[in-house]
Image (cartoon, rainbow, N blue to C red; front, side, top):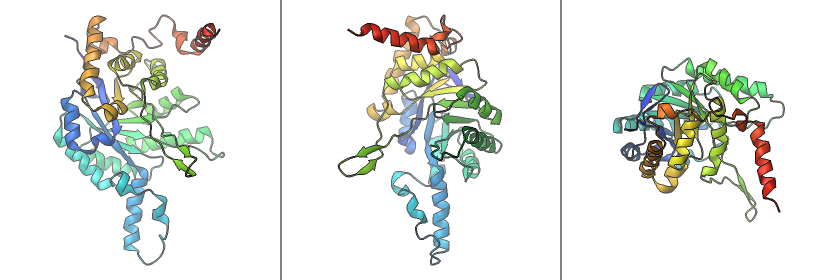
Length: 334
């Protein structure tokens, strides 16, 4: 019998297939269906720092109405009632999801500063969240901000949260760092129990008919697995923290690759949004069939077996692979 059990952030999971942060977690009925389909844990959609700020601004606005102090301040934020819920309702949804299922429910905070994070991290813990995922989404456009300043901000943010909660904390990172392994070690030093690779930014398009910027959301494909897969293989065995792979996991083969590279778990959103959470049954069955065919008895045995430290040619994950790929492409040219 193939053993699919794994651990992540100190949590015992029945398999390495988790649901990534998405709107699917907004309804307890859907979270329950995820559990029924075999998904081992759910990361809730993110509570944004701007929502916490917006909530505070709105309260002050009504308390001080007539002073004209907030004439335009609330207009800087999107219509949060339409695109997401406020902080208090988010906490209530944590409670409802926890009541509906036995699998772990991980809350998610998205922001770049300490504003409100510590307070709401505590409240999420009190609401019953099994762990917390910090989604640090920041695009540094100010040319005066140095890379070391940005990394110091990440360190201080993670440390502030970790020092004030008792539940495990993971950090969801982008791949756009000059020295990613060093930053990860700093975040582990700050208290992070796990890393999620990688944050998938929504890239704005340009609508040339209406002369507007269009915040287009395109779902991922399996082709996008390669970037996090490479870093997972490079980091496995080199850092003292759990690893979650996200972006590009759509099939059982993608899940197998993620674990073999070194992931404790893989977090899936696009596939479930596009084709329903029922797909989890097929993904897990495909993984289990592959493990049986290749005589792997457990996920633990398989984890990291194709990481850089365990393959015959470690250089394949570095510059040598780049050169070989270019050469193979050149050989296809007429």
